[in-house]
Image 1 (tube, rainbow, N blue to C red):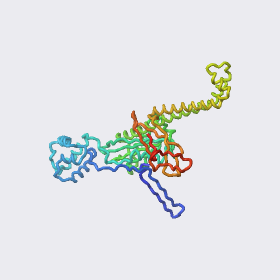
Image 2: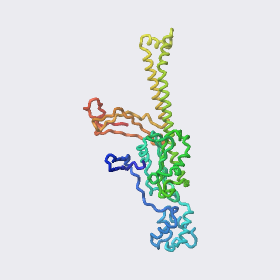
Image 3: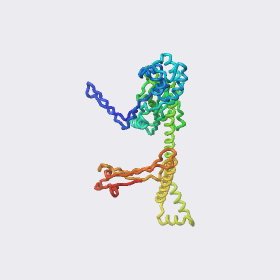
Length: 418
């Protein structure tokens, strides 16, 4: 699920041939996670042991100010000189690091922990990516709806971390309620789920505010945390403790961002269902309405405004069947107008939609229905949607000799579309 870009082949060979089997988990994505970059240590992530190692790995003549600016991140020369000044009279910018004893290293370590530095960057991390997470969820669970979100890099004790989350509704083999899927550095966490930070955070989410029932709906919650330091708990690193407020806030924000997306989709679905129910109810009463109208025209003895309709009924031009057909057409026209109105509410641009026929490469295949191409807004709040250009080349030309297939290629074997 967290690695849809990988393919796994599992083979089991049993002494009894009939029990041997092979299983292949095919890849769904060709998009690999970004390769992590080597970065310098963040000052807040250091301890005395690591400071000793860094000092021992460089020449002893290196000045202290150069050590702070060259070996650590988020420290420029001005900040380094200010830090050295705060260390006391026994320290100076030109002081060789070989003169730093155990007591000086202890003082430097305490100052680096107390000082405030900028957050570390996330280039040293390799998250799966929001795109891969979505594909993995769709591949394994086939949910009715899915939303994903990736938080920007944050810091925990000087170590960068990134939280990626996904929330799905429905799906194959998903029970009612919350189903939690946890990953740490793209490794699944299978045990001690009840004590994990993701589980406790997901249980605290007010699902009802997002039109989701935590007990009746089949909810899948997916959370991947990547970091150079995962705050595991337990001897076997079975779960992530919830005592880190920074990580907990990022997990909560990521899950809630997914819920906001699902709330919009659920509202759209509810509105569409309401309009469909309205259309269905109107069509149910069409025969009764047509029968009442016909009886009304039959009862009119001296027609004035409705004289033309009475004449058509007497000549047989206007019948109950014709009236039912006209009423059904009116309902369908009204539905189409409602769809356009609903689409404009949710940001669709229906004026730029059109039907096109796709011409496949294989002569034996043919798309049975036209495909509606719709130009969507560039993002939330976008007023001018991007222009989309589509062109079918000669390699997509329909076989003109095949019976029953219409030629869709124009001159130069191209079908231009807006």
